[in-house]
Image (tube, rainbow, N blue to C red; front, side):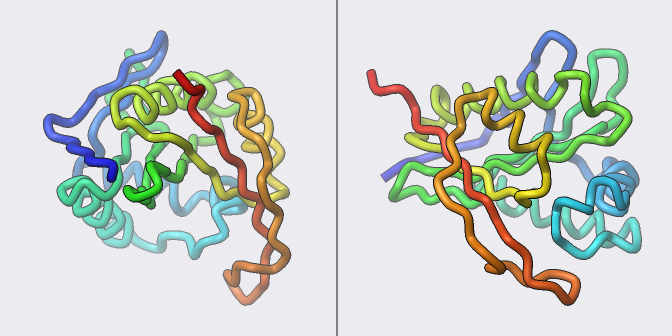
Length: 184
């Protein structure tokens, strides 16, 4: 069975980005992310209505981290410590060496290759440092940008579920993408 330990927290650095631990001081930035209709359009969850809801989300992230059940990074640039997005490996199924990716990026940073760069670092961490065998991403099928960035990383669509998710009074479809580590 997979054993993970996220202590000390792994800060990941790329050419333009620093992926660091999400802190309670990020609650206002998390609120902006999780209340922006352009972002929430594809998350298929109820948007945050208060900074306290964003803080509760950060507490959940911290609990997952402390219990080694998932890891989430705040995405920042080398120029600023302000959170511009987040990326996580969560829903880790340790007996199957598999984790699920989740990620968001503020709209003003989209289309610049930043999520591609962040995913590079997190995928490498997941396979090399964590010892995962596979990663999956569950996306809204209408999210073409997410589909594109996953496919650029070699993810393959494994499944398409019709109306398997209920959110905001509607049944929605899901597409599942996966990437299996190259065998050594």
